[in-house]
Length: 135
Image (tube, rainbow, N blue to C red; front, side):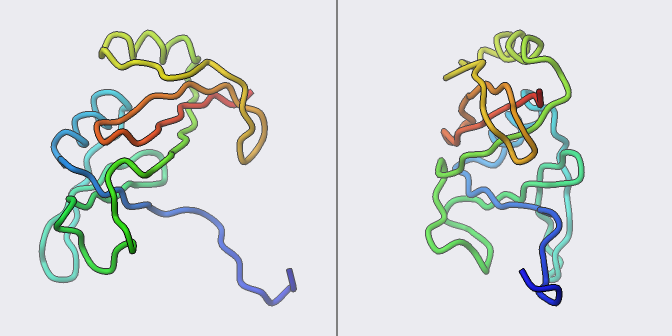
């Protein structure tokens, strides 16, 4: 990379296309602890997003996606990894309390900044959700 080449520094948001926005909001807030953020866009309409840390997930309703959008917006096509500062055992208890099945884990994985211990589950659209603790 040359010195004058521009570079990216972080991910601001990503967009999930979902079948049912209320079900998605419930899962991500009640199970994963995110918060709902309402925001107004340039046309004056209000949308809902999920906020966590310094990032957010914008939501598009399947069949009523906002422009511009992915070329093939599809519920259940995402594979997301979230970092936690809580022990894996606490997440396992929490997910069990909510009746959420763990698909795999705890298992060792490699993350962007080093080794992780991860568990895998599915959201209401069957997106793969990885909850990882940095080792």
